[in-house]
Length: 494
Image (tube, rainbow, N blue to C red; front, side, top):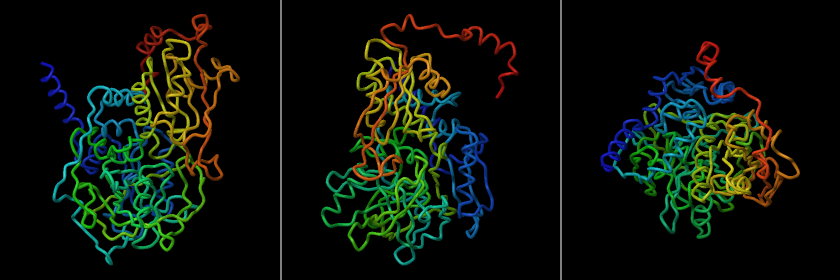
């Protein structure tokens, strides 16, 4: 009986989640009214500014933007902004029911990780749409694509923002597929920036230590699931292909690349192949670039280059674009939902009971201001929750604040959170600090190495010793709220 239930559950899930590629998703986004087509935008600042403004006006509900007929380029060379960056679209991408609020997505993701999630490795195939066009060696010209100039003070045009950089560990064979920014230097050369401690940088340094260039693929248009996995803290030695495949419910198809045999996503839009060179003769200036914290926090610097020797691309290719900026940005909602669920999963596996919800606020760029709601069960429970949320793998990189609140506080509602901080927190007693944590040169509060920062922990729960005697909340009961909403429903539409 249990086996039949599992088979039915998996069948239903496959029917919900089975999208083949980005184009399949675009059709679905259009069907649910979540895609706007923009004609005639300029690649130079204009389309990025439009993507930024549209997202900021309606966080979590703004449409994806598909730019066509971009200035100076053929009409069929397109750019997509904000693929999964809304309630509805992220639910479609992940195969969840349409959510009513942020925590619905987090709960669905958490339930999947807790109940039936399995890694699904990619399946190697011989051909796919990505091989429709291949430019080799001297024919490579990256400027044939409408690479955006995103921010006014950027050091160049960035082909890699909503991207996946694919590398293979030379010792173990582990395939890492992570997101790093990629700036075009000339027609067949890019710069690439990787923060210290990131998996791709570790792999790259192994090749450099041997005096060898590092083989690399750079996917610049792909299934949003790969991008979501690529900029999340997936465990070391776990491939993002496997992780994203597990969420899709069936394997990604990959094709061995011509030069290095690295796995090309068969249904990607644009993929570059080459090598990363870190010798003194190959180093070039990369950046600056406006980053996810909302600042130009790192100056232009000398960084390794990628010599591009192959460009694989589909007919009518779509370049995917992230616009890191002052939040909310065109990828921070999706990041916030996924990261919230990953932190929840990790701290429960570490043994923390009583978690009611977690939200990594977009105002904190999906990393810097994280709130965890718990049902207090013992003295020290709130402190334990905060420390675990701040130090687990998913919550540790470049964090700043962790706030713990009671179960009556919606962690995604900033009014609730600030009210709890204001009325349940005694600053000298309930604020703690963590020193010398893992950060990044992109941290706006750091001026130089070592790239470590300090964290604040806020206990905004009712004091454990007298929580049952804490003043009663002044508000209508849930029953009365439900009664008036049913009696005058027109007041609560939209």
